[in-house]
Amino acid sequence: MTETIIAILGISLLLYVLLGGADFGAGIIEIAAGRKGMGTVSKAIAPVWEANHIWIILAVVILFNGFPLAYTVMSTYLHIPLLLALIGIIIRGTAFSFRYYDISGGNVHNYYSWFFRISSILTPFFLGIILGAIILGDIPSSTNGTFYDIFMRPWLNFFSLSTGVFLTLLFGWIASVYLIGEAEDNTFPLFSRISVSFLIAIVLSGGLVFMAAEIKGIGIFRKFLDSPLSIACVVMATVMIPLLLKNISKRNILNTRLLAGAITGCILVGWFAVQFPVLIFRADGNHLTVWNSQAPPATMYYLMIALVFGVFIILPAFAYLFRVFKFSKNSSKKM
Image (cartoon, rainbow, N blue to C red; front, side, top):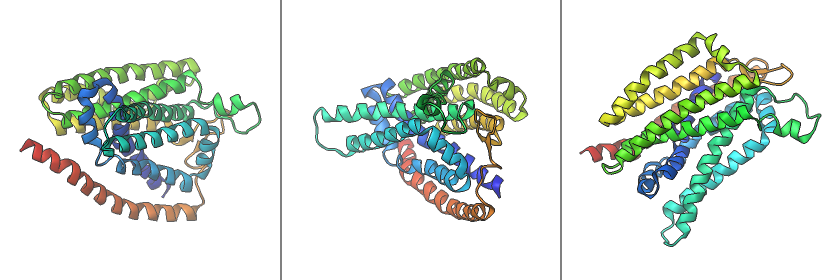
């Protein structure tokens, strides 16, 4: 039962990175593409961007109900980056909505665009910082101490900042690959170059994360080497990169998106294999795991039932949404 709930949590996070993360990445790519790519970005994410956030809501619900101790620790000791990420989500959503639906002209649309772009960077950056703080293990076990030691030091460090940079670049790269399929003939070379540049950037930033981990003494690289699944994920992701570049050059939209999703999945599964069964590493060594932070059996039982029924409702509706706004549009474009 617990393993099923954790699997659904993992799938929710993967879908949020692939879909919601691509929405944030679109704002990042808009900075790189400039005005030439603004129209493509708006048309690509406008029909579905709100629906993509259902996956992070599902993940929060699972943590709140199924693993309340982990949820409490995260929302208490990491409330500052959480608050900043939520503020970014709100600003980004409102700015994009006003920019897309406001029919009045003038310079006000420039303000909407910059709010949209800046918040598209800040939100994934702080989400990455939260991830880094969870991995690092500087989160205290009590609120005894200074404000900085309790609420700042666990996330305001080189390692957490490096994971923030990595996740931001990852979101931007996913968006750039998706936008290749939305681009017209005159913008296709632009988004192709951007996707390759971001791919190089995430490889370099991934190396930065490992370097920061060694500096902090948490030895993620050794943990990766000790995990056959993590090694397999790295090998698979590396092998798929040349295939991805080849499909980008040939403009094979479906294959390109599938490969980008597979590479992203390998990254997340590789991290999950190292992290599991720990949910949050703590400074005193009393880490919060799947087993010692879960809710009572009765709560887990009803949560699992709700999730199973919910999945059968959400997935068909979500697939229909994409079929109406995405697949039919792409089909008509090819015709």
